Amino acid sequence: MNVLEGVRVVDLTMWAFVPSAGGVLAHWGADVIKIEGPRTPDPMRLLGGTLEPGDASWYFKHYSRGKRSLALDLKSDEGRDILYRLVEGADVFLTSYLPKTRRALKFDIDDIRAVNPRIIYARGTGQGPRGPEAERGGYDGATWWCRGTLAESTMRVTGIDRPSGMVGHGDGMSGMTLAGGICAALLKRERTGEPSVVDGSLLGTAVWFNGPVIISTGLGQDMTVDQRSTPRQARPATQNTYRTGDGRFLILSMLGDHQDEWEDMVDHLGLGHLKGDARFLTAADRQTHCAAAVAIFDEVFATKTLEEWKKILVTSKGVWSPIQHPEEIFDDPQTVANGFLRPVEYSTGPVRLPIPPILFDEEGGDPPRAPDFGEHTDEVLGELGIDPGEIAALRARGVVG
Image (cartoon, rainbow, N blue to C red; front, side):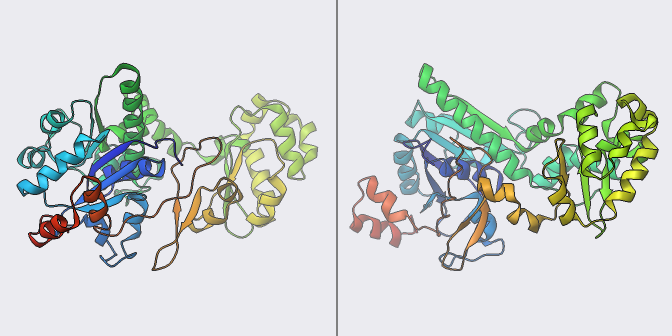
């Protein structure tokens, strides 16, 4: 993908949230230079991986795809000078470091803007850039999942009495939204010449993600309790879940219970006679006799396996879906047709990675390989005009790795 070709990003990040924003920008064609300390690599590299070529953790391969890795000591004056030289020619400065560290190592907004007044300064935080906890860190398990109301909402929906482990990964969602904000800032600068400071946070993403539940509770309602407390038999048959003959599940999601979708569905289920049944003639009738319709559907769906029903329902008009295991998504025909998961080759073997969920002209692009630790140090420094002898001297002094 080359929609961001010509955009240069200095990526001073660690872990997953903000690095994932840089990974999206790199996937879309930006030149993203990831800076890691010569003796302190991004911890995400080692979360089940090593520093050996091609053997970083799959987390790192996912979230830092397509970047160039520069090992640089920012605690040294020489290292900071190299950082500023990179900033001079960059469009975006991206960081996940806390304000205390940004100030101490002199890469806070004023420091970077003093070098390049036109640069877009993007930062990701746990709780947002303002308020009493603006200088505290955050992780998606604590800030996005728990503080952001998702854990409690899950407890209400499922009826469990203790918060569950995280469902999904708030880092990737939050990074995707931050990447979108950076792209909007690039467009604004292109049109007005004015750079922006772009802020994304785990808490802010959670509030957006769980917005319908949060809004409803603010109005004295509670969508989550409604979902838990309404028995299946009180919901329309075309908006329900069903167990198949092999113990799997599928969901019918035909909102509005439209007449043509009802008639088409009962035909697909071999229940065409229900179209003349007085209990089910209209949506209002079907609502009155929900329990009877659900019982009939339960009995029919139990007669075939999920795979058999998938073949039968593929031509139906209404919305339905199999309730899939994660490993099944690799072979989902829609995942395959759209290339939502694609292999990336490493010396340790291929890894199938998701692409960012945006297509350009119906194409999402193959995921680029994540860099080995310090893989591009000489290359990036050479582009700054630093000759090989000086690079060797810098390496000997521990300024670069």
